[in-house]
Image 1: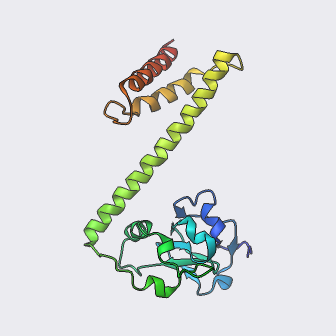
Image 2 (image 1 turned 180 degrees about the vertical axis):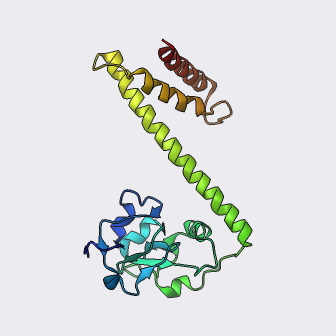
Image 3 (image 1 turned 90 degrees about the vertical axis):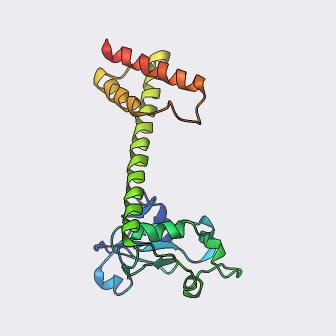
Length: 212
């Protein structure tokens, strides 16, 4: 199962492997092309668990490179008829439990997939949708980076206020301030006016530290 070849060999557990949160980009195991044989899922295939309790996790992944998988994973491809991100979005709307056969050991087989009807919009609309998804993914990545930076800042401030260490240097604070300035909160309906004011005061405090 781990020959060290060029083809990722994916098990259900590898769908949670770091880097595979949405797209399959890597694996804990690799095999040779000879071992993979004809059982390779092409780029743009939608993968999901097909047997047992893992179906209940309802997780799906989109392949970003050719992979092979064990028998507990099913893959669906449109053979080029659909933009992969569009196909993936369709399956994200499906509860895998509704496809299983209801036996004591749940299973999803080809007969459960074949009856599915997928609306095929013009390729231009599919591409627009795919570009929108890519932009959302980019924004989520940038927000996650911002959160990680803010967590670092919080820990650093705690060190300063409670005497556990020294505050971040001016360059690090300037980087944090740059991130904070990009966060738009004025029109965020989830925040109260008090929360917005506290955030602005926090930004001003960091700005004052940078300007010193």
